[in-house]
Length: 179
Image (cartoon, rainbow, N blue to C red; front, side, top):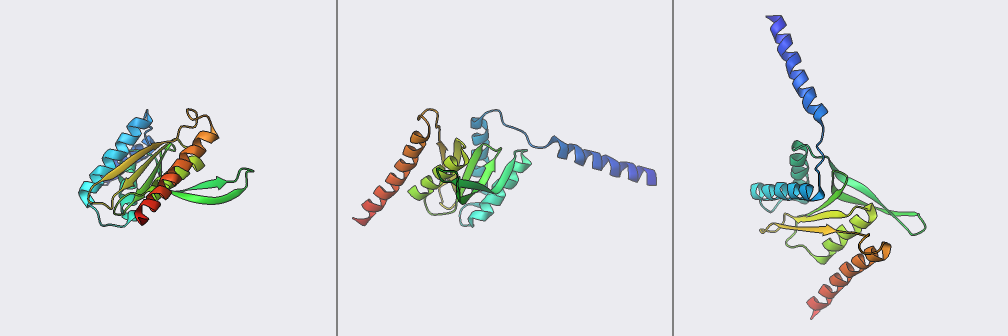
C-alpha cells in the first residue's frame, strides 16, 4: 500500500514538471497575440466590471495570460536615453507581453490624450512597435492599439513626428476645454 502512494505521488510530480517544462507559448503573429490580450481583457471587464484599482486589473490580466501559456512581465522597466546615450530616466510599462507587446492599463473615467502620449513614449523608449492601451475604469470597455513603425515613417524623424502629434493633440484638447 505504501508503494502505490509513493507511485501516485511521483506521477503527480511528473505531471506537474511536464506542465512547467512546456513553458510559455509564442504566438505566431503580433495580431494573434493582440487578439488574445483583447479577448482576455474583455473577459476580465465582464467578470470584474469597473471600479477597481488599476493594479487589480493588471494582476488579473497577467494571471490569465500566464495561465494561457503567454510570457508576461509586470512593471517592466524601460530605460530612456538622451541623444548622446546618457541614461536620463526610466519608465515602468504595466505589462510587457511576449517581449514584443507593451500593454498600458488605466482605471479612469475615459482615456485621454496624455495616455496616448504615454504609450507612444513607451513604444519609442523600448523600441517596440506594438502597444495596447486598455481602460477598465469606464462602464464601457475601452481598448486602443498603437503601432509605431519607424521603417515606414523613415527612422527617428517619423517616430518624433508621431510623438509630437500626440502632444499636439493633447494641447489642442486642453485649449478647447478652456473656452
